[in-house]
Length: 288
Length: 163
Image (cartoon, chains in turn blue, cyan):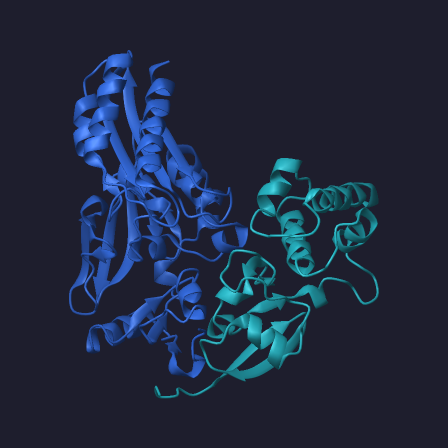
């Protein structure tokens, strides 16, 4: 059933500090509303339980992409389109660009935000696997606590659960810049090329020298209650020469590390097999 | 029943003309365009951002108007399908849709045309892969898409020859 529109409140406080004051005055009473590409779907379906929102889309402090020698820092309101248009992201963080390009379609990419994708905390979101393999850090801001940073890999604590407090807002997302010899892999498998929610999605960043894995980050989406950083499989691969035995070991490790389920989009066995195949595809590509 | 919040006044520019509407802040831009401004060229397909039938240009960018709460259109400049032609003269994309048979039942056509107009504004010489990517968020149940892609390619060719 459709939502009863007058029951919902949406306000746009003029400044960031006014927004944080409201969020902090009655923690949990108000929630942030950015691009709306997820919330409006729930709203129209009559499934948006919370009723009071603060539009944050117009706040300049949460916009823009800043490049320094050590980091690329994205405002939480950075859209998928802005990610794709940014030259440094294109060159140094191709997995994030690939994720942005495969999220929704152009109209969604123009509206949806990176911060929304993170804060919404869906295990099937497209950008989190990319953010995890790039060691992303998140800034959470509040009227009471100012600013605190934490590693994105620790942010998702359970299905749609995060370490963000109700009085906090996601401010910025910071990516440490890396040596250009890192190699990158991102592949999302869905039913349709555009708009699809993934059945599985694997991102990897690997530093290979002489066929040996010197350093690796690996993350998979849609196969557990949160996006998973695959620490055990990384450990299996770190320091090893890439060959058929090692790739086999990595596949076995991945199966122990992810916990896919049957749901409307796919089945557990399909997700497991395809996730393993994606890992093998990545390692085969990097062993050449 | 839940408490009723009050309507707000939203000022924006629609197809070049200033417009002021009173609406609940969470009202979908789609409904305000169709029901308040009587611009019924914008269609509702799925109502959940999957089909692109309700696409409009908001501050120059393609958006699905079913996913925009009208409060976020305050101060914005919008173009709907009614604002694509210049008076009686169709836009090159519209002419190409007519010439190449890109429209059948017409429900997806406004969104398709706006997606194509937006593509050509950002990339005047797209290849077929660019066109497919740009229109991937728009569903059509009649044409099988080929005539739509041909229409956009035709619009690009006409644009180059006209330039």
